[in-house]
Image (tube, rainbow, N blue to C red; front, side):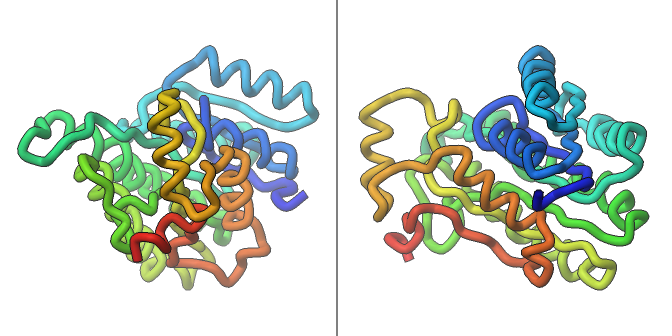
Length: 251
């Protein structure tokens, strides 16, 4: 029970890595507060989690809305008495293509969903962690935009995910002495709805990885669990790469 009696917010919790993390954290003893847009899907995950003996609540909304970020913290405090950590996982890929064909609307949408949402989350969550005497934040970044791991047509996504690493490092410098650990988690290709269902595309992505496969969401969730748990008590300010070796190919 790595997270026994800890209260953890999970954003992007309605599918993929976020949903897998929510289930895992609850199984490991956490009180889980789930955030995503889709009310019905969140309610279903919460109900199943409770049937399995876990503790979970949810609130649907838009992670790019500062009021929603504050509401998630308020919910954690109202339901469970405080906040101990968060897995800020929400994000989108957006439309892919070269920069000169990228619309400003798409650029802003991708940065807002991936990077601005993380800023808003941290802004709301850090005071709650401080009042608790510390805690842990984890942001889902990517090998894309890190360690020469660029892929064609992903400028906005790469910029946002690289920005999350910078945000992680800055938050660490500001808050490590207060007992708040901050980490970036960098998954490789993962079989989620975001990855689509094109078998040829999947085969290409699998081929990029030295392990010759994509990750299961549950595997990435395990890495997030480590970063949020007390086992990572001296881990802060750094990217944890869980990418099946793909970044090694681009190093």
